[in-house]
Structure formats: C-alpha cells, structure tokens
Image (cartoon, rainbow, N blue to C red; front, side):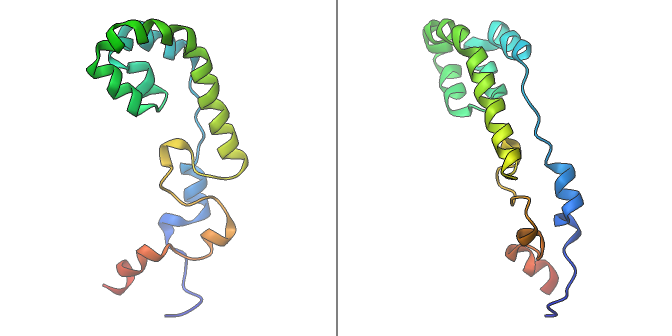
Length: 122
C-alpha cells in the first residue's frame, strides 16, 4: 500500500467538521418534556441520560416521586449537558451524539481509520 494514499472522503476534515456540530439543549424544551412525558423519562432521553430514562419509563417516573424531584433538577441537568458539549468542543472530541467517532485532530485525520482498510482491499 502506498504511504501517500488519499484520506477516505468520509473521514476528511471538512466532513468531520460539518458533522461535529455541538448542539446545546434548551431548558424550555426539557421542562416541556418533563411536564408532558416526564413520568416516562422523556426529559432524560432528551438530555442523553438513557439509563435513568428507561428506569423512569418502567417505574412510571419512580412512582411519580422521581418525576417531582426531577422538576427541581431539570435546569441543572441541561446546564451539565451543555457544559459537557462545550468541553468536548474545546478539546476537539466528538459531540455526545457521535461519541463513537474519532476526535478532530490532524494526526487522526492524516490516515483513514484502521477498520476501513478492508473496504480498500476487498
């Protein structure tokens, strides 16, 4: 294989930069989901807390006790999510939605990921 082989277009810096948007969550959306679907964990799914969302879904919001308690914590959960996204953006890690992707750095983008080698050899 040639050491000067082109970077796979799917992993070009422009493509990854376009994919790596760091969306922030909105408090009003989280509160609306908490109020309407909170006893099924809707606000937790929105804030990427899937484990506890599933737990709330099967326990009817923790017998509604967890739902009421979450009403006091929705704002801080949104703040934590947005702070994590900001940190990921600052250190050039993928956003939470794309956690499985490589970081945005020139040394990673200089060559295609190892697992794509079989695409070029098949």
